[in-house]
Image (tube, rainbow, N blue to C red; front, top):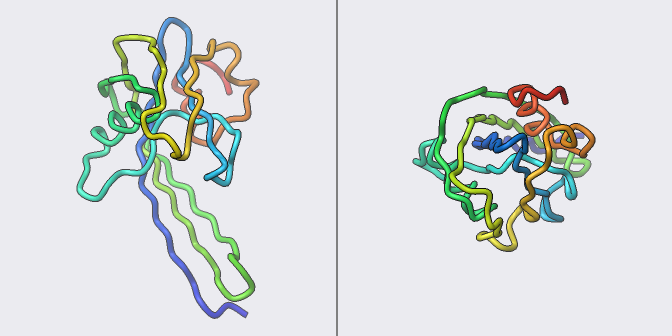
Length: 149
């Protein structure tokens, strides 16, 4: 029997970064439920932070690259419920804001925010991306990359 309901809402911004027929992805770490999956650079928006500023900050923390927002591509919403234990129901709502982001260079790629939720920033050829294990936001980003995913 449910004794408590825990509502969690997370708003995050992600960047679709393409350069010379390649897509920039980061791999999720063991700190996440989807460890090993590949995602777009991005993450949670700090309180009071503009989403466009958040995606540029996250891009730098996760890849070492400086970028700038070119356009807003999509706003996505995902809701799920699951039990944390027999008495606590977690209701999780993710709002994901997707931007097209441009960078001036390919690298070097460096993780600035060590021990974070992602590592291994990598440029993948667009024709290889759909064969990777992708997060939902990375799959969504593929729809705007010109590649079916």
